[in-house]
Image (cartoon, rainbow, N blue to C red):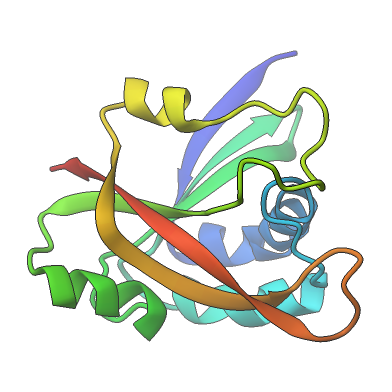
Length: 158
């Protein structure tokens, strides 16, 4: 396996959106997100982000096939659910991401599922108490209704 990592912006980013949407759906369908969305849902969500001239996708390819990706853009202009917790806490001089919070005893947790906190901590990210938001989405096995999902922000200083 030979992985190539590329930074995608502009037209290359736009061209990659169908594959990025498919990858995100596959990843977010699994634990801990359990997102029961469609590629069309994900395209609808990610296309406004991709139209920003300051948007970036760092993509990992194996033989030309997208196997990993992360998205990035300045916080200002993002979904209100992302911006509001930072505005309340003050300060935007961080790199941030948010991750779904699941109860330790959630019966849907697969056997052998690893906690990703040690991975993120090794990269100098830390969760910030009280810096949380909520997103609604359909969950695997829960029918057509969306449910609120608590999201914890993790920060690393620039």
